[in-house]
Length: 373
Image 1 (spheres, rainbow, N blue to C red):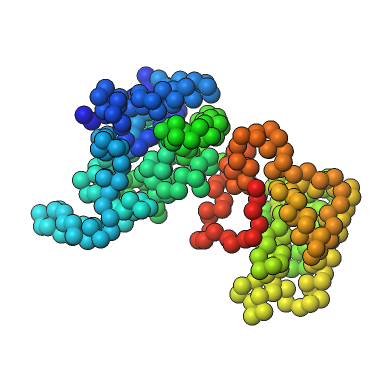
Image 2: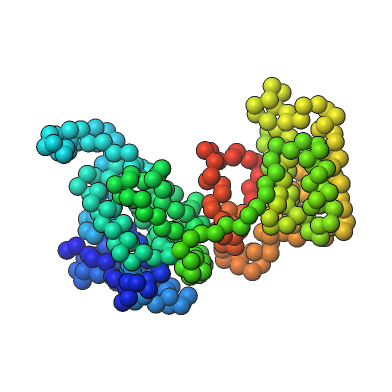
């Protein structure tokens, strides 16, 4: 039996949509999504944060159960097998199947299943929600083209023609918050408070259709003059100073500072493109940069804020200067408030900040010896 979507009582007032993976045994028997054990937990979590399920669209990427073991991989074809598949072209000819929409290790979506993703996007267009909650990696993939739920959960992301084939998206876009599927929570109960926090963020995001990010300044590749100017404009009168270091190759490769939530500066010492791998062109410049950093960190009047600051303090004490003044640590503070939750910087960002999954913005993840947890 194909399991249809649960439509909201009033489609025009629907602000939140939930997208899962595929129906299980009980959903298949009764023809409704999220009514089995995972559905019971789903309803409990919605009630816990004050979301009325009847006001939301609740659907799945696929309407069929993917076998007795619920293995969604059956809806995909591996790369080697895909080379042997043929499909009927618009002219009626048999041509080789080609897809530019891979899903991690599952491979490519089978051609007969492409209509499911189109159907999903059509359902979302009918209710036009302010926010779509992607429950699990399959939903994240169908909505954004990404498939690493652990990297993107809790962050607001958008679909893009650069990631999704245009025949699915058709120019439509929705804000998406990925989180763990309720079935994953049943297997790992530690996920429950994380999903609850993500649902609370979904409520906030449901108030507006567009995502508005605050204006921020990030000073990169600074000169010595830039550092003096930054000090004059932002550091000298700052009451608090957030700092963070990156390490590699047995050295501090970069130090970042933020005197407030809207401006920051990154000061490198390592440059892979330089012949000697040194960012600063002369020894005199590097000494000046180090002295400026020493001045910023040794000011006893400024409260210093770090994430896993004991690591930073150890390295800074060895290579640059002692950190002086009152010291706050976001990792310790978060762990004191929520000891059951992860405490890495990426997780804290997804929980407390309304930003993108910034560590996934680059072409490759930065390699650092530092662990922010």
